[in-house]
Image 1 (cartoon, rainbow, N blue to C red):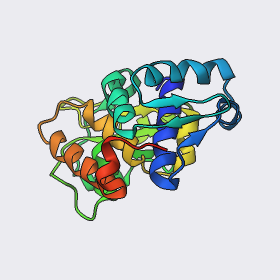
Image 2: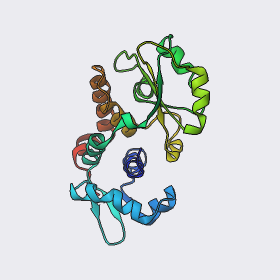
Image 3: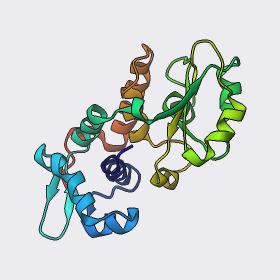
Length: 206
C-alpha cells in the first residue's frame, strides 16, 4: 500500500471513528513519520475532486464518500499480495491458523465486523509485515490446488488500527476483488458506514 493510501485511510478512519475532519499537514507528518511534501502529495487529487478542502492553516475532509470511492478506484490490491497458496481446510480453520502478527482483511475482516458475514466466502486474506512471512509459509506451505490463502504486505502504520482492518480499508480492499460474492460485502459495509453518518454520507461539510 502506497504512503498516500495510508494517508487517505487515516483521514477516513478518523472521520468515521472519531468524527475528526480537520487536520494539519504537519500533524499528519508527525503521526506517520512522513515528510510534509509526502502529505501534500497525498492531498493533491482529493483536493482537485472536492474531497478535501484546504484552508490557510489546516485542511478538512469535506466529502467522505468521494475520498472513499477515489481510493477504491486507485487501489491495486494485487500488488500487495506477497504470498498465496492452497490450504486444505475450512475457512474457520484457516483463519484460526493466521499468526498473531497478522491482521484480518477483506472477507475475514468483514465477518468479524458483522455478527454474521454478508455472504459465504471461500478465500482468506490477511496483512502481515514481510519480516514474518516465514512463519506464514510454515503454517501455509505451498501446495497445488485452488488458491484460498492470500497474504498482503502490511504497511507499518496498519498496526495502529488493530487486528481487523477498519471499515474503510475493508471496503476498499474488497472493492478490488472480483469474487461474485464481494458485492454483498461492499454493500453491507457501505450501509454500515451510512449508519454512522446518515443522509450526510454523500457530502460531509465541516
